Length: 291
Length: 184
Image (cartoon, rainbow over all chains, first blue to last red; front, side, top):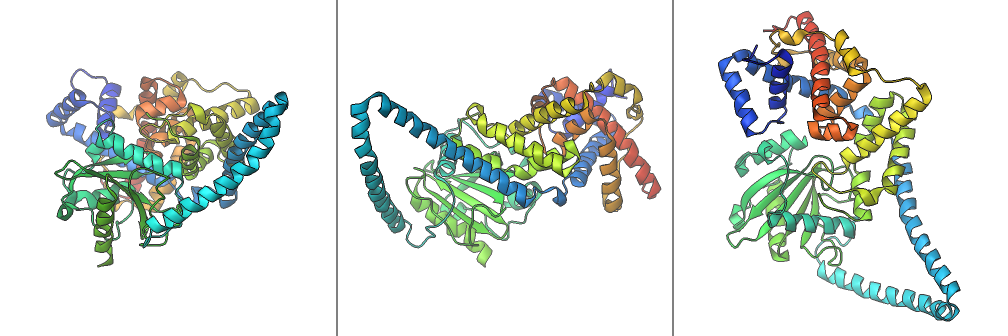
């Protein structure tokens, strides 16, 4: 057994090391113990193998959420979203009742507001179609999610946040493909992640909570300090995207230039500081898969 | 941690349906029960979304926490039985950790058998251990996050994992020996 430790303490130390749970000082302590006794290295290997085996045994495809239940919960989400609006309109109605004069004016305001909204909406749609010429104008990426990507890009670019578990990803872009296969569980289908020909150097990669399960956030920076953020995730049918066809969210969805597209079983979300850079980088990533 | 608006929250939450269902199935061990649990979990999540802040692992640990609480509320209502204290389970677990650990050659294992045997062994674990193990191994949560989901201290998470891994190691070592794989 390891020096000065009970069996349980030793087990927990090497298990925590295998799970990447130790800080620098604790890791050094574990490494010292491993160097001193090869049995400890076996403990680490054993724990890694056991974790992998458990994940493999229990992460069954048969455990996917059934479609009927999925639809029910999506309907619940929509219902919940819809119930927020009537509440506010009920409040407006009661306020109109309490104040008859304003209430009567309010009766006229509503139809005018609807007409104005439709008119402005038509103008915005026309503008979006013009701005997105050459790209798919359709898509189901909502304004809030597009905006969340934009905010995340800005935060990480400013160093106020960063992708997570970056130590699990390589420091060299050439090794990134294999790492993504390992962490995302899918081949990249030939998409190229090296953007150095465009002047963008690979900076860091790590996990990110958006857009969902096992998403990886890759960041690039050019000599002018401009950043590009690329999120990569296994494609699960959402958003509805035709393979290889890029989609640009409307400008009112997010202030950050953004493009979304699908390559095989992967979906890519690219956010940059300028739309020119995003438009230049997207084909560079995509074209390699077409070769 | 940062706050996301309702729409973004719902999208992130809906993207986790497979993971939540999987965990609901592991906890309840029955599709109908899992379906009820999941609907209740999402209903509570949508109602409480204002309190949610996006962290490292996204919305998943938060949903798991609601699922865990919902399950145990329902479970305790149904069974009216106290959960087994950890101390009691400790007495019945093997002390194989004193022995050198086996280094399995996974490439030479018969995976179908390993998966089946391991699945059975995990299913047979006491609930407290099984849930910690699943959150850690299948859902990839950190010890701290597992502790937050289950509302237990970090030391308890580590201790439960220690016991769970010990039991599973012993069962897999048996399988390795049956298959004639060297256990060094």
